Image (tube, rainbow, N blue to C red):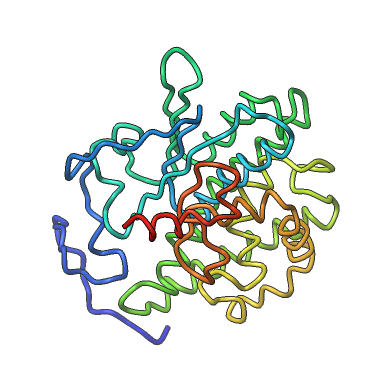
Length: 291
């Protein structure tokens, strides 16, 4: 260790709003709305409120894959929730997701609206609603759900753990970075060994498990997450790289990863999606023209 600290935890922790870090201005130790703001509602059965972080991409990929299969009931409006501005703390969003995290979904296809929050729950809800991308029963279903929940349990180590301390924390703490780097590499090895023997994560079929895992671990395998590819030597996970490239070639994935994206090359962004034609006309151009 090269960075000893003289910090001693106090007897009682108190929130310090000025603790630094990239997300200090929007993190807080209490739940609930900070301001009144209703959510917009479009014309489609499914209303998604999101941002193209890895967790958001999971759901837009799923919706685009369902549409590609011909499930017209999966048409959706994808509304942008700029979390850096605290939009997730508006009263309308909190009513859909009391945890104030994107993505959040409202299904208005039935007599009463149904809210679904947590990305894994949304994937499973849509898979069961449309009977696609999740095995119906038996060992195949158990395997698929095991890997889906593996991602939900493992992802925070990659994001809030490694990502925070390596890329965002105001102070680089060797112990924290080492701890989470070790865990991320272990997880990558788990995935690499699995994909050495199977085309997709759950087996021979493309499922919600791939959709959940790819935005996080596929991006890491390609060195696109936290600019940490060299640090973690991600090229060593050759089977994960193969799988990541294979998933990235799917047209529905290419569409889904654009939705609610507000950074990167303009061609990679579709700020909001309200119709399939928006991929051609670019919603952000429409918004700019009307502002």
